[in-house]
Length: 376
Image (cartoon, rainbow, N blue to C red; front, top):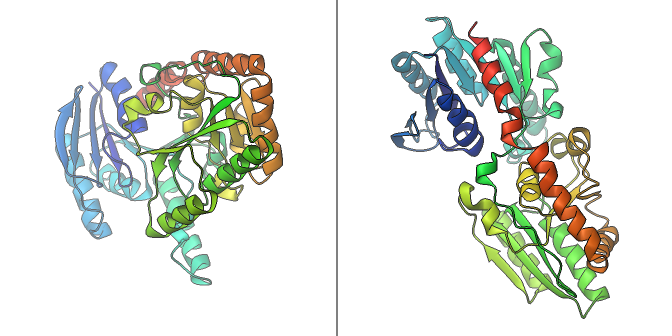
């Protein structure tokens, strides 16, 4: 029985990609699987998956590496899947003691803009270069790559073209997605936005479009559903000011829900939105929520990110837009309201696309075979 160990510094042990998809699929196919995160204190066995995690993010890098090494030595994995550079460095240390495959699963842009936010110029440039070199070194040490999307292949796949790679998008397992197909009620619409609440994630663009739609169609009953929360005090102040500015009457804000109940939480929504800013990092990121939205049977209106247009064609079930083109976004919403049959077709097409193209069962075997072959 091959042993696979997941190491992560930035994700919780029961992260949807790591635990609910990758680890569960490997365990179901005869692998012995263990997950170690440095974000929380948790020791348990769940669905034959061992979890041994410690909340030590505040510790030094050497202490974190030593913790990962301790886990490696006790579990003795044949394959180690790493989510961040520090995990790769730890796995490589263990590789000196035992022959193992070190898979770098790259799902985040590195360095992320959030990593540089607290630095001012010219320090920001120095740290960007430093983080880039750290990531480059992790790529050099890894034996294999998994990329969350094609656009994340830059730059490691091009610097190390002879290393075996797998593109593994963030498709959800169908058992975690509940479909809620709707037909529009005349002169009513429920618009939904989920996830982190911040200016960068586009909630301001969302509100601008709704405000314009409301002013041009005063008789229209617009319901707004937001599922998410702010992460920083700065974002909370910004969002409170935004709420005061618009003062929408029919607005519901729900706290983030559990992964398993995510699609249930927006079942009443008619349209789902993500109008995040168009910047380099966002252009190279394929939003995970998109696949849950379409699986639930919700037409989508999304920022026109390169990662989306390169990966899929959404014109059958939604629209890609410039998030700052408020007039255009309002027109698209109004067009759905005026053409309920088009809305119905887009809703059905969304669910069909998820079922036939964009769910975990479509790509699960390629992941299992890739992991299995890395040990050969």
